[in-house]
Image: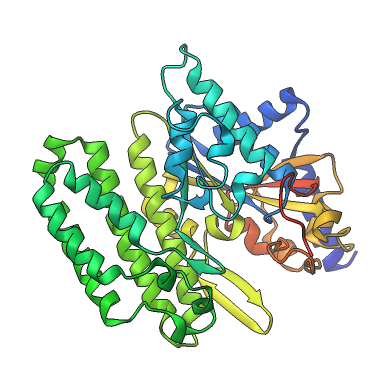
Length: 435
């Protein structure tokens, strides 16, 4: 028997002994699998991440919805945070609380970024949360958060919305101070269209992020944060701790958004990696604040692409360029240690997403060879994890149709606590057509 054959045999034996197979359509097997994962992670976890192998996997969204329901009903979770603009998500949270808009259609576009409000699975998640909160027997009401920065791959928001949120808070307590700050900030804000110019993503000369007005606005924002911090005892007493913390979160997000715009305006070989790093830093800071907000009420499930929630460095191959940065999961791992855990996902086949059968011998081929259609596998802390055998496997082909799909690697095992591997997934219901 060759050394390679022996290693692969050990890997197959490990998968067979460690994998917990289940079906999304069979609650008994699904619930038992989830309960096993939660028991293995221990009671210290306050923030659980669920990564998605790609944007466009319908069955991964269904997995997320059913996981959240189980976590709420049996494991003390009170909130979900998804990869969507955090300022926008307030509208959705008002909707699930039974306040604000009367229909999902009214929040579908303004309450989500990236067009995620149009996905049927997100509608189903939100409607389930609204119905749960309407049930008077449920003492703890669920919260919906977006934790992404207010940026897109094709542009970035003006800082106006997040700054005005803070100024409105300050005005409710100290109208004179807020009025003076608003007047000074409005002088420097200019037109939103200048901040949101999509051409700035590829051409730093099109960005206003390092203009004299933007620089003065960054200074004004620092002074606003300092005022909030200096006056904390007074502001908390005149509002409450929750509102105060939210205002500080928005002020710090404004600072990071202005830093993002400044980075957009600088020509550098590290420009794109820096922008990706700033975005993930904002994600991590937002999630940390959400955990604090929920502390005493329940735990938080975070849902985003694998590359955002993983430990270790993230990589993105774009043409001939390889970008690397520290993702939100790495920051959260340092902030929370054992109080943060994360489940990654992998996919065997998704014809609609341009993902064919995995090549023989690849990790996806070996993982999907056993019972399914979905299996959960302990990875980061798995007993007897054959890392050498995993590292020796060839990588499967990526997708030319959906560039958000990243195949599994040996790093996928060390950077996650568990992996949920699906035999296949359909394309998102309600999602935009792929080329």
